[in-house]
Image (cartoon, rainbow, N blue to C red; front, side, top):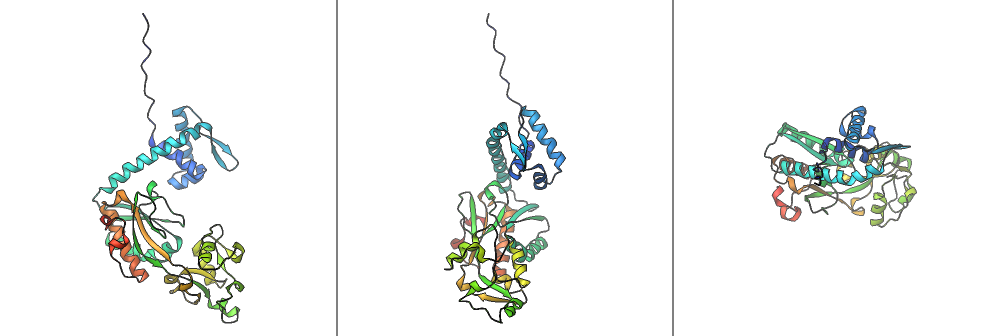
Length: 320
């Protein structure tokens, strides 16, 4: 009599927390960077990776000159792990999107200049009115991925181009070119706006945003046009305030800076639109809606720009 084959057993389920650590190490490139990202210690994450490798019986990383490199098994696990993260984020979004509690955290991301010069009094006001809401501010000039829950609300300078997001246009940031009075004095007391190439400019290092902006304004300049280059916009602005040269800055920021002179008017520089965006799943969350509305109110007041009808600026009126 033929024996029956042994019954198939399902593989043991993977702990999501181990997968989360695996993805953090992959995304950051090292255990040390992943520890900073997750707010944990490097030895703890090392043990988590060892636990995951023991669980699946495969080695996932090998050491390289610049950190860790995925093994063939690690490469094979990467895409399923990312799908697992996306599913976990979808569950989290669905739950948060229907909560009516104000208590909890809202994660907000904005650029360096907006975070440093526009948001502090607005966030202070939100916390004064709603101390039960905690704010996490991610300061980045990169466009954080709201679909992957890197933030709940983002202040962006471009409109929505992803189907899962909703947005409301707040207004625009007028930009000007500014130099400190000390620099203007060293240049003879005045700057000739028709020959701005004669002067010292402060620009970005790796980003080509300014090159594109100058091109849009009719000035075709190269990277070496900027004698000082730094991707941190706040540092660039501080350099200009120290008299190092000319820097582009939002007029609403420069208007409050002592000694700064406008050398290229806003009419010569395309303005930056300012959008508030959020994940569509969050439009029914009382906490997200509250912070979203207070941010819109505070930013419009800071920009000195009156509100416009929601139908003309919102991709989803349910958020308001």
